[in-house]
Length: 212
Image 1: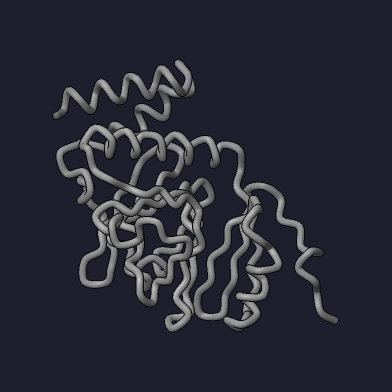
Image 2: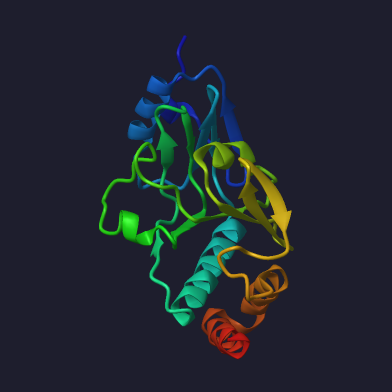
């Protein structure tokens, strides 16, 4: 008996693991799931994970994405936010969907492109995972060569930088070395829950300008 994909229900905050999934099966599942879906996926070594985020997860994702955009705007750096785009490499048989991701140094290389192919295009310069359930798979990002990965667990921000093909925790973001973000990001996320999104963004923008 074969289970159909539409039979699988993943409650918010939960995940489903499917093993022995071939790359061809994975590609077919991606097409069947479509792009307008709440679930996130990752694929590595024949293991497919499907996860549905919690509302808290989505709130934090949006706020952190907004904060990063303010940093880039104030630094006058061109960027492209590709959100939860599916990044996959057919040759490596690896795929992942970050919660947020940004092309910064490599923005010009993918400017205007409707499809990103990691066999020929660079990976995003920064990926962000809202990891309330401790599900981040560093291996996927390492194999795909994402230079910097942030992980926020609902309390603290963890900055991981890629060196020699492996991630190492850092107190400083390589994308924003002049800012103490490991403390500032969680602080402004918490502030947004009290003062609201707009007031928090104004306060953060003023803070960024003070640092400059």
